[in-house]
Length: 495
View 1 (cartoon, helix red, strand yellow):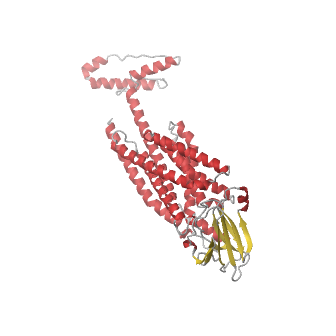
View 2 (cartoon, one colour):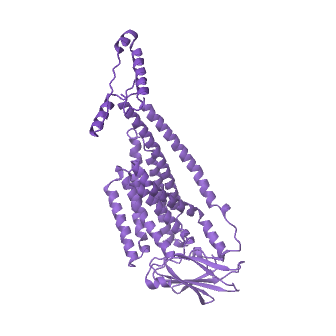
View 3 (tube, one colour):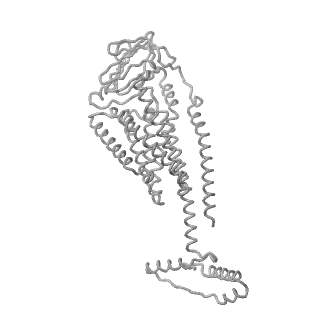
């Protein structure tokens, strides 16, 4: 058999599947994402709803600004015990049970209506010294009267707590919740997909290990998928639609974020020998120590998670540059040595997906810090759309990577079986050759098994070869082999 042509055919099939897969993903993914995120899937409001964006009076540090637009407020960074209050007249809305909705982060809340205390949040966390989680506030208002003034007072409970005020809505609570859900529809689907995919990988890991695929990288793949899914779910506050336990959602968000560099370096370490370097191991050790220490400090209330986000961003940027460099180097070297290692399609898919994810993460890190420190709307209005898109692309390439790995594994097994067959099979008759017979006898003797040997000699083969030619002699041998196959169907070995 011509194995060179076989390899060329296999490569052409892989290249064709590669191109078709990329084309399908490139066409369908944007269409699906645009459709999921479009307003065509939105549910119409039952009642009128108003976003309270303009007309606010903001007081901080004895300075008062009037008629302020919240998205342009530029309140600066709020540190521990800093107080800021905002107030405005409530507009009338067509709702039988109007509700004021807004979001807070690491701060206690006091809400006054016409200078009378109406609602409080977070004082119990503050007294116990616990980190005050971010929360959504839904404050029902019995009746909106003319010139009714609402005042909201924030008191930061941590340094570098927040730098923006977010969005305020008034309307029916069902409409407001539907609006939040609809704006978070795409992150919801992506995060649930990532988490479910991680569970599937964990379930399939024992089965893959039993087939000989004993690469711990699959566990880190599952961990990356879970951490990204949980982080997207919590950062976008989608988890708060399933539970009112805000502290759990906030802590899960920080832990998932801090675990992403660790799981990514772990995956890189076990991907291949080319990534098993001193730098990779050192970075993974640093990530492990970082996650452990910040967790201990947080749960002992020594210093909470939010203080370490900037350090995590610095570590992520350094490791992100290293990951991109390592993967690009791997791709270039692999393609240069393509004649020595052809089965790299699955590795290329995963490398491209991880590079795209890391680039998206770096963009969101810069964007978040810019909006927090220099942006007028602050960090409460920040989003992680790039990480969300990068995470989806990474998991899709991960799926394709395992698909191509299975194709390569099946193909290599078939070639291996064929080579083994050629090594132990007589080409003319299809029976076992002398090497196979000797190997079987040695094996049976080692196992102390009883067996019988029937030895047959084909008479008059030489006269047939001499009188009729070796071709007829070959026909005689093949016919005799067929007689043996039909006569000894249950034999352990025919040779």
